[in-house]
Image (cartoon, rainbow over all chains, first blue to last red; front, top):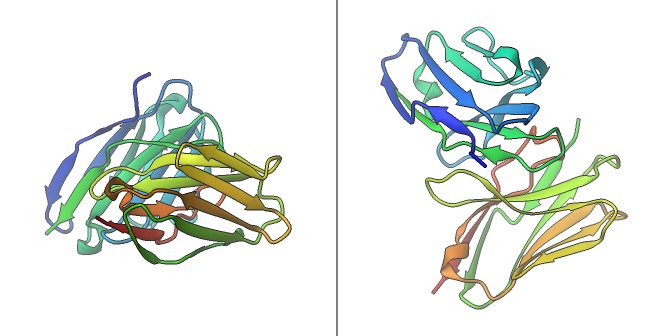
Length: 113
Length: 108
């Protein structure tokens, strides 16, 4: 079974620029999560999708972050404009549904200079 | 909302000793209790989980115990090895909150 795919793996941008991350979950997984993990901290949920609907985006900074899940499969997370404090690893995870094992992708390491 | 507290925040043991990490939850409706391990520079991975209809689950050197009355569940690692060094997380059942985890260091 193929795992969760993410791209790019690394990205360096200047503050005020825009960036987008892509995630392809495990086939058949209805639930998709985006997390932000700052160095030394645990993953912080940004948004959770169930199929193509948003379940929870209470911690998503909506003035600069946006996310969508196309046709309930792939997802993109965008930051516009980026700030220095957005430097982190962005993890995508999927699961068959909620309250089940989450499978994490390798993450995208974002550096904002 | 659901709240999960994890203790200790750091744990150092000698190789071969046992390690125990405890999580306390507040939502009586919680029915799924996972443990994730994250090695340095890697992604979190599920190492063991338990559902509310069982009190204990084992997988080789790892076990999870659940006390629904006291609302806590614990991760037990026996015969610790250096490769067990990592950060361990017990997210709430909806995986909305991972917290800062427990940093386990196994000294060779």
